[in-house]
Image 1 (cartoon, helix red, strand yellow):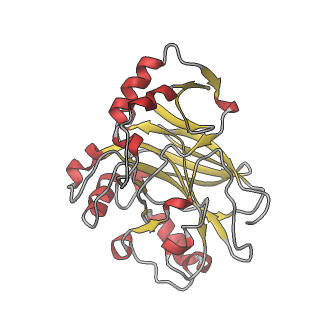
Image 2 (cartoon, one colour):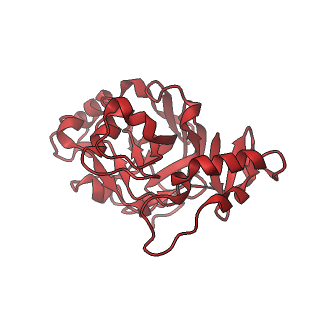
Length: 287
């Protein structure tokens, strides 16, 4: 199932070039009170929401996909996790381009570990990327994004995929500079997720998916998740060895070679096999 959030926080099922409005399925969610538990309520109750959505599909209103504004499919992740230098060809280009490295020694993800991005940086493909710091280089990074479906802590790699709710396209927009990644990648609108959530049962394996990115029609990135240094299951296990992963948490699995600058007015088209393709606009001026 392809689940999307659109317009004024409505819930949809994507079929072809249509969105079926199954917002009534949200009534299956339990009421909550203070203190609100961390994590995304919809993702935590995804089986119940899916069941209700399936019952509604036959009679629910249908809208043209091109006429809706797509929000991030996860509204309230407790954290967004990044996997740096997780493709060997990106390691190579980072070593050659000081605009990426900024004097840092580029080694391996095993040395660097993972990093966290602010949840307030998250947007969907129907919203514009608003760049900041025009005096510095802002880069695109196309990635497979993994959405955690249930609480997991210290899970093994062979069990890790059982905790996945689904997959999406992730764009890890990056301000280049000498600071740590968690600072330069947490800017508002610098985490893009979508265009929808493809539930985990739709994909046989996340570790052999083609992905690509174009800017204004120009090809920039093209690779496959089979080239990940640390695969999806290993990333989940590694992250959960340090902290609990909650429903709705997002893991951006890393980007291949071909990262490059974007500027106001650019249009980015991203593709991940099994998820689909989506286009997002960069706002026509810096914030």
